[in-house]
Image (cartoon, one colour):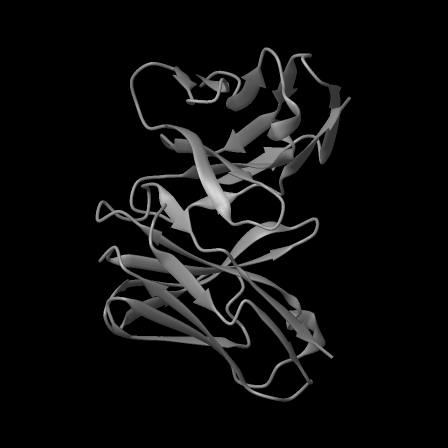
Length: 114
Length: 112
C-alpha cells in the first residue's frame, strides 16, 4: 500500500469553526489531491497540488483552501465550516508521471459539521 | 470537457453469477480510462486501467474491462463473482495532462 495517512480520521465540529485536515505521504510523489465523497455524487476534486507551494482549484473549491509547504504534507482548510461540507474527504497522490496516472488514496476523514 | 456516466447506481447479483458494470464516457480527444474499487470503510484502490494498446485489460482478481472507442464505453465484467467482491466501483476518465473525472459509482451487492 502507498504510504498515505490522513488525520484526523473522524471529526465533529460546529458551523462557523475553522477545520484543518492533514494528508501525509511517504512516497515522495509530486502530485497530491483532495476529494470529497458524497452519496450520489461520487468523488469530486476540491484542490490539487503539483509541487511544493504549487496548487490549483478543482471542481468544488469554494469554501476550501489548501497549502503545501513540504512535499510530504498537503493541508485542506475549511475557514468557516458549514453543514454542506459534511462529507468524507479523501487525499490522493499520484506517480511522478502526473495527473493522468494512477492515483493512490488515503483512508479518508469523515467530517460532520453540526 | 470530458465526463463519465455509470449507468447503474446499484447492481445485485447472485454469488458465482457473472456481472457487468457499465461505464460510458464523453470526450472529443483520446482518453485514459480507469476502474477503481472501494471496499466498505476504505479508500479507493485502482482495479485496472487503459492507457493504450490492447483494448482488453485485466485485473489480478478476475475482473476485466474492454475499451470500445466506437461505443465510448469501458464496461467492467467478471465471469463469476464472490462475496468478497462486495464494494462500490468507480469508473474514471482523463485526457493527457488533465485531471481525472470520476463517475458517481456503482454499488455491487452479492446475494448468497
